[in-house]
Image 1 (cartoon, rainbow, N blue to C red):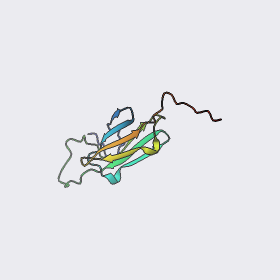
Image 2: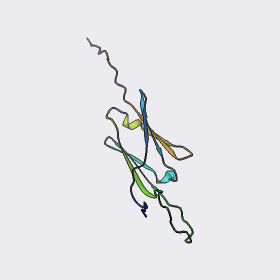
Image 3: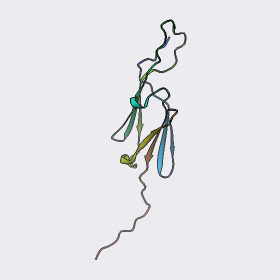
Image 4: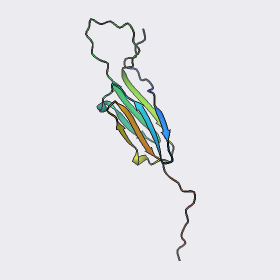
Length: 116
């Protein structure tokens, strides 16, 4: 029987974009806010944490073991054209992490004033 305890597993995510931002949604059920770490390294967003398995009475024996327990890490490549210093995240009451990455808006044309 496969045991997923203490294994780093790629967690699922959804990504959306608008003209002004990128939205990343990651379900983190059974993970406490305190165990979630989000860092930005160069142009990679790294989300990591730990899902702790429930403590069961010793009378129980595993007959089916598919749930993931232990550490996880998710690396997301970000484009260069974003405001790295304005990225923010929220964790919903049902443990869905939303990360908003504002896009750098580059105008098509900018007039340059000539000084006399």
